[in-house]
Image (cartoon, rainbow, N blue to C red; front, side):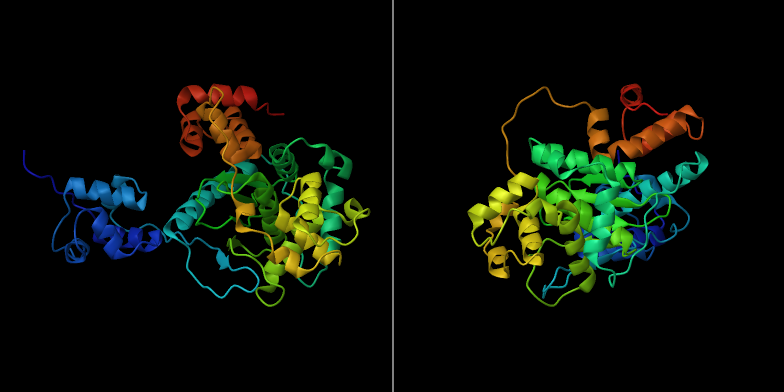
Length: 375
């Protein structure tokens, strides 16, 4: 049997490459071709084989059928600004993986916004603030609207329990919180604003303590309406993006109210810093930032935190594992699963449409619905 060629639409292939963030050379290499050969596909001087096009589709994370469309879809603008931390000297564009997860989040967010309107769910009450507003004052208001006391926070057994508790409170406030496995070279998280479905994404490459701080850092971006992807570099005492500085201060103040540190004096060593961080189930960097803002520590303490403090702890294997529904609930969060279950139960969308968006097998939907009671 001879080779099968695919009558792709060159305009669609060009669009998909531009949207991906990959270079033409990288795409050509994935197909076992060179740039000249890819150029012929793009200029209608030749057609790729089915084998080569499957490899290209895999590289670009697109369905093969997309390349047979008569014209390129509307541009999928990722819509976020890559924000570098305070004092960062390095500029870089969003990576292909970051762009892919941003597109995935946008698709989910658009669906949620439409479903929420059809189901007549209340719009989340997220005030709009300016970075000229004091982060401490805004944080105090946010802390008061949540049902977590300082005593309860200190009583949590693990940082994992802490993350789940904070996530639940943010979902109760109407914020979609998703977790994506983007890798340690990607951003810590990103946020995208929508009045019906504000969304925060957290990178699972980091430990729970770091994810908690990312949650509220990105909430700061939602409040200031500054869609962002936030980097992993460390902070410095001065200079840098003022919005990033505001969001860092806001996150630290929400997670660590000044009253929680009333019995703490000057902290100048990592041992004491670690003790206070464990008490509040936050990262060393979050605690250091908060102590600095309260004049109970100085920047040299922050700068002395070793890189290993950010590393995710690797536990041993064990347990029976999770089913697909549990994995997706963990990834997309309770608010998302409740919304899709409610939409199916009230005939807003079909069951098959929900399965497609949630990426779960048919038999998993019953388990998901049973675990997600909808009022």
